[in-house]
Image 1 (cartoon, rainbow, N blue to C red):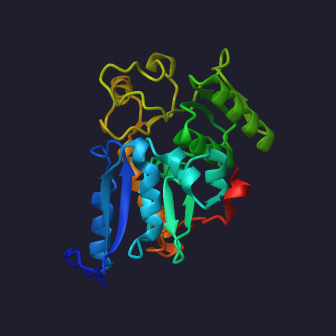
Image 2: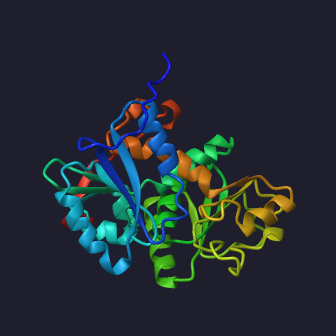
Image 3: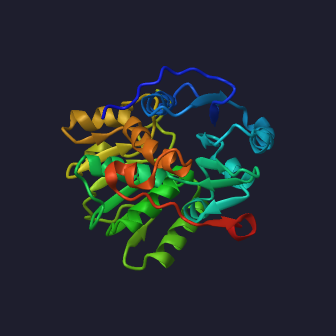
Length: 293
């Protein structure tokens, strides 16, 4: 049966899902998510909201009070603030110390998850690339980078090289991954003679035209795929350079699209069996704020 295509009309009964960030002009998910709501006759709407960092705490107070709100989606630079504001978080979010999706309970409690890593893996698999047994270069160990790192480890990567300007953050992530995944080698730089199979940029590099490339493409001649989490521009200078060298690429928009069923499931608009093209989407038990710390 063809999906019921409802013409989007916002009423007093419409469930609202804010998408917060600063800026938000680069976000890709409102189009596909609102399209999904319309095609599946769901009376809901996702609305981008540009909120400055110094005012984001007030937003979470409003979110708790919004009876017609299912939760919210969170993008840069608010993922760490969303983690702090959440009353409960999943284990994924606790490890990343960041939240990109919040589900609001009927009582107004905020339950945070971090699904960037799952979305990255889903996009990677759509290219026919598995992380299992691979040497992976990861640039950036912020919220998204940390989430991606843990999913790569879960998928069975052989080794992970983490490049991050913040050395304390880099060392902390390497130590945690090494303790939890002893079968995976974790390094702070590419080792001599190492062949990189997957290269990932999870840093903001590439959002501005003057940014340096995350890593020299000429050192990635045998890589299976070059992936970028940046969504604007969709094709970053790093990916342009990779394509010039004939390399397969994955852009940030692909990760954003892969995020859709995962977030819809977490927000309880979609049944778990339908997410990820039939692959089971794990919604982890949450931890209390005290446990998360």
